[in-house]
Length: 163
Image 1 (cartoon, helix red, strand yellow):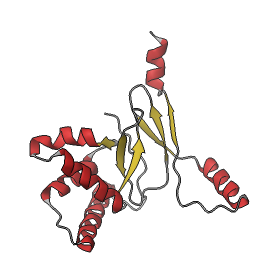
Image 2 (cartoon, helix red, strand yellow):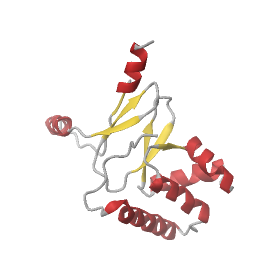
Image 3 (spheres, one colour):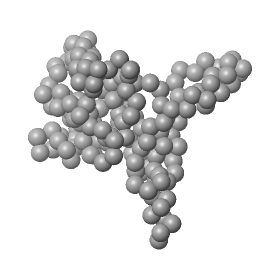
């Protein structure tokens, strides 16, 4: 699988320091909610921290089921990680949710291939400026936004042409 996760905070001295901070946040979230941080939840988080692409619930299950981690545990843990603002959901080309660790990562959008499902992260400062300007003009205060552009990646376009 290609490296889809591109944009990480500048302060990160390698991904290790970033991963340690995410683990701390997840532990703090559990303490604040009066929950126990189970080995299964930790393993799910670690899987995200070691991956280089966006993961869906089914893919996570296929990776972790041999360790005795069930589908429902993964589902609930994903919800917790979203609540803790560690993960963000991206809708894939098949309409299913995929997730990325997004804590303190700069804002970015996604190009999603409808053929192979690859997700490419992109940053468009000009589009961001236009959005801000238009929101101000309309007196609208945005809370968040995301762009997901669906189409065919370069490899899939070449495959379609060669058919």
